[in-house]
Image (cartoon, rainbow, N blue to C red; front, side, top):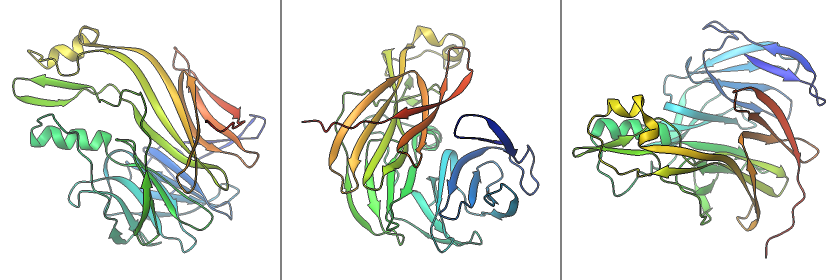
Length: 303
């Protein structure tokens, strides 16, 4: 379900319920709100978008035959009602596609999957790794240019609504971007724990772009040979240990000029900014209790 709160944090109402019927959800994963406050919620399990009005009344459901696999799909909607859904499209080796307002596939953008180099995967494990790491976050600026941030590696591309690439940029950092890798004989794969990844891209002000990165400090040898893969799930601390979880917020102009960066300790999912220029997120404590958090942002440009 989707929960709605006031600006002061008071619970107002909820939207939808578990299920597969109109206005129901199996696994909602992305929310987009347009200029008329129409609410679009992407449900990756039901492979559709649920649409609600500004008062959270259900309007309709849009089903997608072509849908990305894996996790972490994102959706944005242009003024013509076209959908742009990012994720892992295996057959097309693509990470973002454009759909009509009725859910018909219009085109795949030429944004290829970027595979992890230097490690040998079986075909099966390569698909699993791609499903886990591939995709990214998308947002619009006021002119409806699309800003796409790869989940992995760190790379931001700017596109037109027809998929034409205008430019791209990235930033070198000291973060450990290596996913948790196992080696068993000659086969490699991904351990389903977690990894450093770009999680969300959004605008703070009209011309200030924010790229949120979920970061991990960990210890262990990701390329160590493991005698039996089953022993990892039984005793993961023997092979790797998470020391710290944190968030990194990188700030850019929409032309790609780096402005500043800041780090916040804790397991935090930053979601978006509000009209007052504050950044909103959900913080999870050691007991997995979630709290909505809000941060004021004062930017001093790095020299």
